[in-house]
Amino acid sequence: MGTSEDKSIFSSYVKKEGLYDEVFDENGGVKSGYQKLLDLYGTRSIDDYVSLNNKAKSSFFNQGITFQVYGNKKSQEKIFPFDLFPRIITSEEWEIIEKGAIQRNIALNHFLWDVYHDKKIVKDKVVPIELLSSSPNYLHQMMNVDPPNKIYNHISGTDIIKHSDGNYYVLEDNIRCPSGVSYVICNRTALKRALFGVFNHYKTHSVTDYAENLLHLLETAKPHGVDSPVTVVITPGMFNSAYYEHSYLAKAMGVELVEGRDLFVENDFVYMKTTQGPVRVDVVYRRIDDLFLDPMEFNPDSTLGVPGIFAAYRKGNVTLANAPGTGVADDKAIYTYMPDIIKYYLNEEPILKNVHTYHCSRPKELQYVLDNIKDLVIKPVDEAGGYGISIGNRLTKDEIERVKSEVKANPRKYVAQPIMSLSVHPTYIDQKESFEQRHVDLRTFTVLGKDEQFVLKGGLTRVALKEGNLIVNSSQGGGSKDTWVLKQ
Image 1 (cartoon, rainbow, N blue to C red):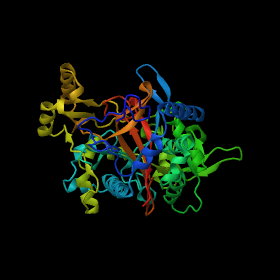
Image 2: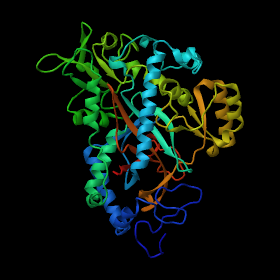
Image 3: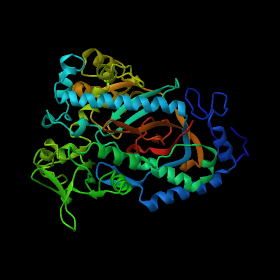
Image 4: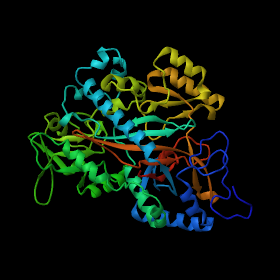
């Protein structure tokens, strides 16, 4: 896309056939919405860009914007990789994404209430009882528990891809402890510092209002009878992979960041230890997994949680966000039923489509998966972070046989999807000091409150930095981009 002597940042950019490029059309022309951006970036040389990129990395390092990668023997702290060339989403596209995310998460909330109460969806044979009873995230302790204001999934992360057909599809739902929103805000801050003038040419929605909206909607879900709720963020501690995010959100909301040892329960109310004495806590935004939340109710060996907090929750004296047991709804096996779940509870057609998914617990679908592994992506239903995924066309014959054996040994644990052609976006590659096509997805963040919803207008565009890779998770070597949602 340039001459051999051209040193502009896109001079060596190669557009490969068969990939849906979000910036350039089939003839190499610039797509609507990106022309101003290309004009502004195109005035810079690749040397200028290298300098700006290094400044951005230094900014992330100095702010401590990191995450933990867990290996076989030890964990490693890394700077979150960030690309300075933003992704643009038009207001028309965003309207579909936002409505679809809200619809999906309201339906999931109805589903969670139902499966922990009357199980009407099971009695009506829409979702089989075996899926619930076999899910490790289905907590019998939550049966007939009434969360304040009937909200389970206060915060949800919906992972969305743009396929080669130009349409958006939901890849999966994340409603246990969805992470990444702090990087959305930090990406915007870093880009403004590096290329502030670019924002003068576009009217983009702000992303810095997330913490304000999160706090407001959490407070709407406060326990009954509380006027001015005290909210805290509870973290497993500084060695957790998302600790930066925990501390960032607590600071941005203006609330205390606590560990389990900072809280105690008395007479079924939760209190925070302070230098001025105990302070009652009404809303706990928890970033601790279910089984570590309360050693009196779940894992007795947990030192991360708060003894007695579940009893206080069961009595309606504290809001836990997200509610314990929400993991049953982001089980990838439940994902296969999402279109039916939306129709059942809302009597609506899904706004955002699912990727066609085979659940290996169904004999016919299991056989199809075993016969066609080379054309499928195999995913464990209970993993996150891109762990345990096998992409069929990347496997050797021996690896295919190993995956087959694992699936046959525990069919309930696996789903399979066609190998989707995620859209690509021009991305700066450090090692080559040039721009190349890389696959991207989008994690949207939806917050549910009492009769209110909020979707952050931007979300986290994640980038698979390895050439040809379809797994975008940071734990698998992925990075991110700032995501611009344009105003009308």
